[in-house]
Length: 247
Image (cartoon, rainbow, N blue to C red; front, side):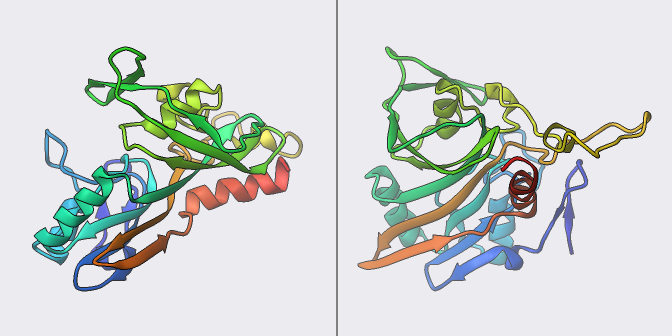
C-alpha cells in the first residue's frame, strides 16, 4: 500500500527503499518529502515509523532534512545504535552529499569552517561567538553555464550545515528558498521553443532543494562498510535538463 502526503507525492513501500540489510543494519535510499524522525507535533508519516513497522527495534542513526534524499542508516538493535552513535560522535563516518547550486563555482577542497548556531524552530545562523564548530569540504564535480554540481563532505553534523555553508559562498542550493536559492524552470534554461499557455502556471523542474546524500562509509564491528544511493527521479531529471540545455 502506497502512502500519500498532502502534496500527493507517492512513497514507495519501505522494503523498496532498502539498499542493504543484515543482522544489524538497514540501509535505505530515503525519498524526498518525508521526515527522518517524528516531528514534535506528530501525526505525519516518517522513516522511523515506517522502519519500526518493518522491524520493531529499528532506530534511525542520523537525520536527513525532509526534502533531502539519499543514504540513511537504520540500526536493527540497541547495540548497533549505540555503536553507530559513537562513530558519528567521533566523526568517523564519512558522508558525501551532492548538491546542484546556482552559478558557476570552482571549488577545489574548499573548506568552510564557519560556526553554526541553532536558533530553534528549524532555524540556524552563522555566529562566530556563540555558534558550534562546523566544517564542510566542497569540490565541484560538473560545470554548466549557469549551475554547478558539487560534492559536499560535512566533517561535523550541524543542522542545515551544507545548506548554510554553501549560502555563505554565494552558492545557494537550487530551490533552497530559506537560503535564497532559486528554483529552476525549463523556460529559464530552454530559452527557445518553450511556450506556456496563458492560463498555465509553470512549475519548477524540482519542487524541493537539490541536495542528495550520495554515499556513507564507516566501520562497524571491525568491518568496513560503504553504501551509495542513486539520484531520485527529480534530481536526475534536473541534471538531464541541464546537460541538454545548459551545458
